[in-house]
View 1 (cartoon, rainbow, N blue to C red):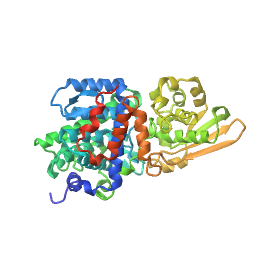
View 2 (view 1 turned 90 degrees about the vertical axis):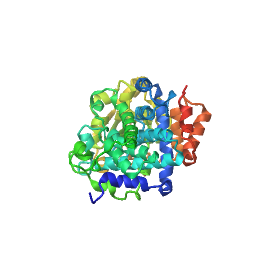
View 3 (view 1 turned 30 degrees about the horizontal axis):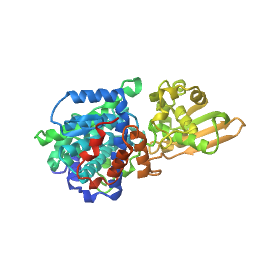
View 4 (view 1 turned 60 degrees about the vertical axis):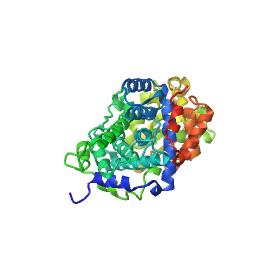
Length: 470
């Protein structure tokens, strides 16, 4: 084989990219993503699904190598990665890459944290592994993005791109942290492709299995890297081959340029969108628009009617069926409601403008909020269509009781490159998520450790305080 395959090119990028080659903004971004991911995982420990995942993991046995959030005893590295991945993705609060609509950190960060403990790696090795793993994850996701339809081909086939690409990126991160040579990283990719999975039917008709997806991705990543280390091999043409990753998942040739153009010089990592609010990302601009009305001094009693314009592609997620979206039965359903998002912004929420306490079952059913939601229509908007999916915009039109009309345009998504969150804002989000479970001093220490992650000698120091939460 005279030319390098795509897997070989990714592996070459992985082994030849040293920590010193990482741009400063990539290093800072990785520290913020570790802090963000851990905060979400801590907040998710109270969920029934989290308790189930932890119970299953602790039943498995094996050599204890790594820490998992909310688990007092150490676990085998793949199981620690599984638990942390489940928790990181369970609250719909994890970061998002656009336009691929991937949630990269929820798989890659747990995989890298477990691998770093397994191999006694330091903070520099952890940052390097996460940066490379996130880059691989995003580039594979973009290879499955169709610019003509403005949609992920993975999603059109019912596949969860987050867990599929997250497993591949996580495996590269784990292999890099473990010191694997180039050929072994190719093998890890080849093995992971037979382990990556996830279908998104639960988004449509229910079930809690989606919360497991990033956990299984991180578990697959550690398992594949370990199997490659012990001599299992994979096909070098695993990505572009006749029966490879892209043919199997996308049923078409890969967009090779998305994988290799600028590899090692142009980094996607700093542009991954942080989520300031714990709800479906399509609703975030609606929260901002509602908050902008509140900032004008407009209150609920002033409002006759509200029209929320969004990209047509978002309607089925946050606006249909409208009767259900205007009256969500649970806090979880409220996370996917455009009308509820407008109300959160109008009434004001916690954290950075909306926090987990704003999405309870009681608030979703409150008479005050339902009366306001009943005034909200969700409609397609042409300007939003032109921007989507590079942003998740919204245009909110309020008709007031005195007959006047007020329009708020939110055409960029907070937390992305155009409206980035600072380290202080991500720290505030972490405090809101973790503050009820950790002493204030521990919260401050963990934030400081993530801000200076390359100086950390022992990754276990980061995680051990999170194993016994109160």
